[in-house]
Length: 308
Ligand SMILES: [Zn+2]
Image 1 (cartoon, rainbow, N blue to C red):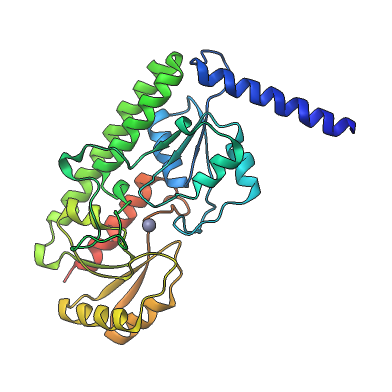
Image 2: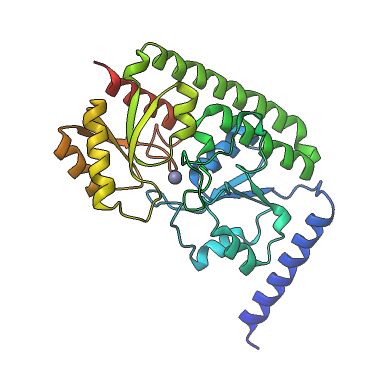
C-alpha cells in the first residue's frame, strides 16, 4: 500500500468516525456545521435562516436546470462531510437519492424542504386541473414568499436541534430573514394590486409559477413546456399560440436556466416579445444572485409587462 493511499484511508476513517459521532448526539463542539443545498436558491434561503453561523454550499452550477441535473463524482465529495443536505423533493431534485446512497449519508440528514408542509393552504397541489400521475405535484413552493418562509423555519429548526449552541444566533437570523420575506411579499403585492386583475396574465417557459400566480392573483395563460427536458408537441405549441392570441398577451418570459428557441418562435408567431429572464429555480448574477433580489426582479419585469 502506498503512503498516499494509507493517508487517504486514515482520513476517510477519521471522517467516517467524526460523522458517525455527530449523528448520534448533537455536536456542541467548535467544528463548523456544513449545509449543502441542491440549488443556489435553496442555499440562499438557508443563509436567510441561518446567517453566518454555518457554512453553506450548493450543488447545481449556475445556469443549469435542476429538474434534469445529473450529479457528477465531484458532487459526491461536496456532500460527503455535510452535516445537512437540503433538497426540495416533490420531484424537483430526486437525483440527490443516488448521491446519498453513494456516499452513505444518513437519510435522516436530508431535509425535503417542500414536503410535509402545512396542508391547510394546500402547499402541495397538482399542476393539472385533472390530476394524473404524469403531471405530478408542483414543486415550486418557494416562489410564493410565504412558502419560502416555511422553508426558512424548517431549516432553522433542524440546525438548532443539531447545534443547540447556535440557537441564539440562528433565532436572530431567522427573525430578520422572515421579516425580509414579509417585506418582499408586501412590495410584490402592492405592485400587482396597482394592475387591473384582467391584465394580470403571464406566459412562462416551464410550469413553475403556480404558487406565485395564486399568491398574487395572476392568470397563467400557458407554458412552453409542462416539464423540463421534454419538447412540446406541435399540438401543444399550436394551442399555446391560440391561448396567447386570445388573452392578448404581449410578453412571454424565458427563464435563466432554459435558453429556449421554442419561446422565440412562439413569440414571433403571435407578435409577442420574449422578455429575458425570470428567476424560477436558479438565481442569476448580482443583484439577482439572492432570493430577495431575484424575486424583486421577477415582480418588476412581470408587472411592467402587464401595463397597458
Ligand atoms: Zn422548475
